[in-house]
Length: 475
Ligand code: ARG
Image (tube, protein in one colour):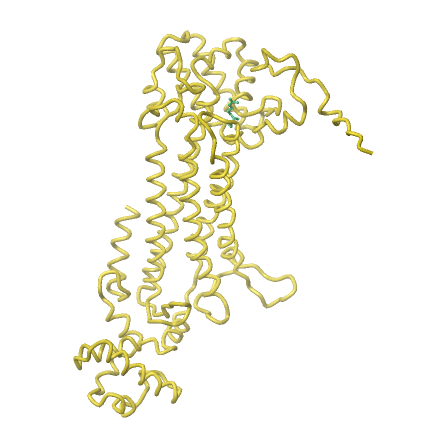
């Protein structure tokens, strides 16, 4: 019929103008406008940072005689009361007050009257939210660093207990050479060390204070930006007011570091899934870290590991979401940037959960050393040791030794035995100079012991690497 539907009643309803910024407005926003505009549902998580920022700003305004000591004291007491209300769950968050900043300011006005309105002198929500968010991400970085260190501690304890437990090392998921479980776990300690390095690096660049940039251009008031920066634990004030209110690099960097850490955790989780499967049977998990099936009574599923593996999707999604929000935004603050918080909150929650679950899984793992050793002996895993022996003892060029070894592997394959069990005559048929002494080089234990180069899998090396890693990462 082509008739345009009238807007729903809620959109037409005239609400009163916003009490905090509605001076030039005759009427309030449509309900749908209010809903899309409001961030209080998620940015209430910034309440502690918002109050800390306001306290620092208030103390600075008093010190600079922009605010009277009496008003400053009333504001400060009011803010503390609000903190208590929020923490007790007594605070009524209101959508009509948009976000955490206006919710707190409106409540402050209820508590102390018109003096509350002086707190926003020389400040804007733009520098306020940039400051709050930096403080929040900084705390999240610190929590992630501690959680990563906790996982490193778990890996190091397991590595210590199994420094000499032989297992197959894989390339292409085919048995390649014997390694030790301790050595394998130390690889993850290194990855986590780099993750922690990225957290620290992000924190260093993040740690500049936007407060005092005001809306975008700075302020006419004689503020002291060094004072507020120091009070909030920042290294210095951010140098450019336009950049200070429109930069979200710190959030992107956090998400990038989180995505990569999540990728590492997903690789560890995948190995735990493989190792606990029947085909491998390298490790068992207890009832505490597995679940049953509702139809197959015999099952024990590694759900926690699978979920750690899967959370990578959320972490990568958060990074792409924020990069996309920020792309092409002109200076300075744009409302688009309100969409920065949900991806960061979600990623931080997911990553912290994954670190904790991974630490629990690692400590729960009970390796089956016999099965791992037996698997390590399969697949002619010591063929490289044979080639190395031919080079070292007989002086063969490595390429020739490689060829000879290949022919010997073929004979073992035909007989259905391991290299260590192959009769000497069979080896000598390929290379007459081989002696019985070769056999000592072909056990999986000898194989790992002999790889004692720096960073290698020999138990002696692994034990030294564990001490060095404890020193480097957990001191
Ligand atoms: N809730 C807003 C945000 O998260 C706070 C800043 C609002 N600034 C403004 N000029 N409307 O981005």
